[in-house]
Image (tube, rainbow, N blue to C red; front, side, top):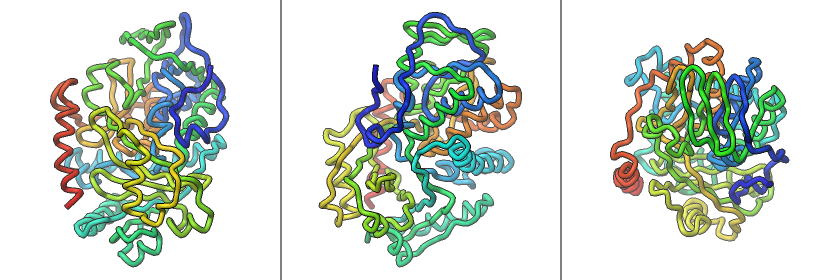
Length: 424
């Protein structure tokens, strides 16, 4: 047996991890967690710390999906403005969600420190403007953060942002010192190890094929069965139709990243001051940061068709050079892609399928921070304190139009408008 992560910079630099067995035969536990990404490993950790007997089932290997492939950017809040959340949910629930979003940022850092997770944690995040109309958008973003009670962000004009990021394309930026970035695969491996140290049992290569719900749920793989009292469904973009009633609320979207050969310390500081992460505010955004060994990890593009570009490295390099033409000499050492899960309203989708089955998914690009909180809230709810989980569960969610066959082309057609708008 061996780890079967896709070929990426993350898998090439992953921390040592044990090879975990495949589930065989019948097993009993209090909670069966389905999915070994950030949400599932966080849920397993918090449940085990509360004394529950936990079994986690992962269809491939820990952090195989988005959790082990993402941009690794730690971004405050949600993929929706605070003011729009007030309009959608009311001020009380919007403020509760925002407060929990801030807690999620602290939780990630506290968990990394508590369990000594080596994941190249770094602080600082920029949102940047590439078009004139984005300058007003960034001012609104800064004002929105302030209205939510989030302090400490700095609005930078054209001159100031160009002293921080060596690109002529940027017209303004907002710097958040509390944001940051990390190695997402190693972070998730650390969560899994912490969960095991707390008593959770993890099985890999154990894809769940069926769940029966009710007072005594059963979770089935092709080789085994888990009898439990509760199920935590944490498969996110890789739910793959396991539960149709919630699968229709999310859309898997492909996104892509390259990793260059390493920079010197001076070269890296000249390109991005202070080793911060960066994301623009185009609808189809670009995002990038340096790895722990100072490779530029440049991500972007999206695919709603399920088909990856023929040459991911070449496609991403072309975009990178539009912003940093001075990097034409840099080699592309790695290039990869993966799916994130979005919702129609771009807010996370939490809830219950039955009295005993919980789920959390659809983080819409903010999963590095919010997934840890999701796991904690699932554990709280199973332990009998559902108040905070229920705030998320009250967020209204619509089904993607078009059914399973037509929702992807329908969304791809709609996104054409936004791609064209990004070009204007």
